[in-house]
Image 1 (tube, rainbow, N blue to C red):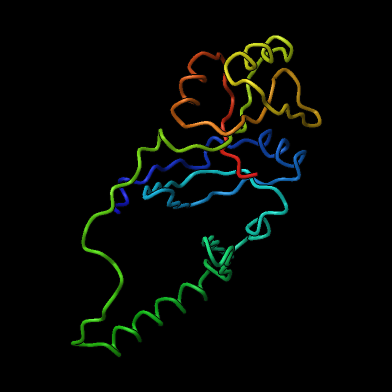
Image 2 (cartoon, helix red, strand yellow):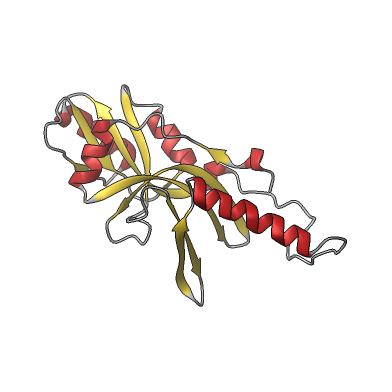
Length: 193
């Protein structure tokens, strides 16, 4: 795929209040790059995601990276190791130089296809979302119920004047439509639990 086709959302909108809610849920917010194939369709995105402590990538911190591969036969397989800092970076560069030197003048077969893979429209992707809305909880809760149906209310210590909840699985398109009918949305984070 062309990297320009991948939906990207950074961490600049994540606040300390979002982190307080995550802690209340025994969760963390991590920046995920994900690619998922479902029914001959592939979607890819880079965005903050809230995961619980039982998720395999929960404990990947600091200069470490983790890659979780979920196969239909093999199940979950995880690759974990240093991914930042001067020594891991130097090691990767040296390994690439050695590999290139070993294969001077040779074509190396790869499984990459020259045909561009078309990604599914991000609006069709379905998942759950954590949403915070400014306002009085009872009033906002009623409006949220009309738009999203059944939701899971979330509270955090020392947070008031807002209502937070987790949706059922919905499409990005439905999320956008529902959010457009709400005032003062403070935060939206994808959820993987």
